Amino acid sequence: MEEEYKILIVDDEKDLCEILQFNLESEGFVIEIAHSGEEALKKNIQDFDLLLLDVMMEGVSGYKVANVIRKEMQLSVPIIFLTAKVEENDVLTGFNVGGDDYISKPFSIKEVVARIKAILKRGSRVGNDSNVISFKELKIDLRKKITTIEGEPVNLTRKEYEILSLLAKNMGQYISRDEILKRIWQDDVIVTERNVDVNIARLRKKIGEYGAYIKGKSGYGYCFQ
Amino acid sequence: MEEEYKILIVDDEKDLCEILQFNLESEGFVIEIAHSGEEALKKNIQDFDLLLLDVMMEGVSGYKVANVIRKEMQLSVPIIFLTAKVEENDVLTGFNVGGDDYISKPFSIKEVVARIKAILKRGSRVGNDSNVISFKELKIDLRKKITTIEGEPVNLTRKEYEILSLLAKNMGQYISRDEILKRIWQDDVIVTERNVDVNIARLRKKIGEYGAYIKGKSGYGYCFQ
DNA sequence: CAGTTCTATTACATTTCTGTTACAAATCCA
DNA sequence: TGGATTTGTAACAGAAATGTAATAGAACTG
Image (cartoon, rainbow over all chains, first blue to last red; front, side, top):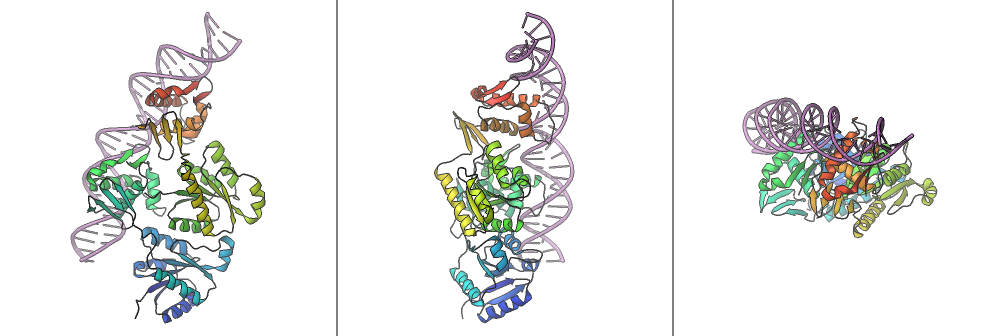
């Protein structure tokens, strides 16, 4: 038999979930269900090959869930958004970007299955072309999220890596602590600006001589140069 | 290296903002959100590569925002206006400056992305580094917040930089101390007007021969010429 | 021209900002 | 679970930036 694909369905309409589950299981997919955004996020997302995600849900919306998955968990699982017809017309039509897909309710099971198969066949994810920033012998592989110096991997923590790649992506540009917080810590948690310093310090130490290229300037923030 | 484009979305419909944010982020753009004109104007507009600006908003309208950005801040960042179908006719006759564009709701994400990419491509093709102000060999990079003379960076403090870029953005125009205080010190702290003088003096010294181009005129203020 | 107001500059005081350390809390993983 | 790793906080000394006052000279005004 073929590979067994695991799909997570997230929707607060239980009936709909059941219908989807029944039909997709007969197609040979392995299904798990979550009835809310919160529930979905408790699952081990990386175990799934695809998500069917309702946009409008009580509490944590589908977009929130997607955001957490992409930003915090850094996973690129394909997502198919389920949207109600009304929303679609009000706001947007025919959206279909990147690796993700949209299907508006009511939809035919046939259509859903077809789209799922199309996406799974396509296989590879968004941004699968290697993307490496180099500065002398320091290399940051943005896709693998690996930093190396002269070929030797540098063991950076998540935050350290994020800061380094943010600065490297904006080479030569001063970025304020405030900005760094916004872009890396997002809006969810509130932490001291001092935190940035501390992480910068740790980062500098780890990248050795290259640490000197991360320049701090009073009133401006940091800059990789 | 791949460039990171920053886009500011200004719309009071929060759902729409979320959808746009998610989709544009999956396209690799860096997004910030403002839910009102006031909020938008508090942002550092010059940090953005493009604005998506809803025309109809409570309070400060999209046009108002655009006007402030163009006239007061003297920035030529491209703006895409989002308009409801009904408004469209009114609008097309009006404001249609430079690289601006209109998209009427409901719109497809595809379209939005396409237009954004078109505009950003156009911008870089022309070598439109409208973010750099040049005066002879003095260059102020508003994005990097770096000032150079003959390619050599000049080490300005934040206030010095702010004053210089304010004067340079309003080349040839006298700006009173009062105005400078309002624009740079904002409302937060109240300081003597003499302060401006002192900072101007320090600035002049740092930019050497160019210091002479910052002209003070009794009763008028300062002017870069 | 004399008096007044305005400005540039200096020196110094004050405030704010930064890098670092040590430690606590949270998270991860075996 | 318990230990390792990561992340956040508080504290603080030193550095950098900013503000103030004083003063001398320039610019204005009648």
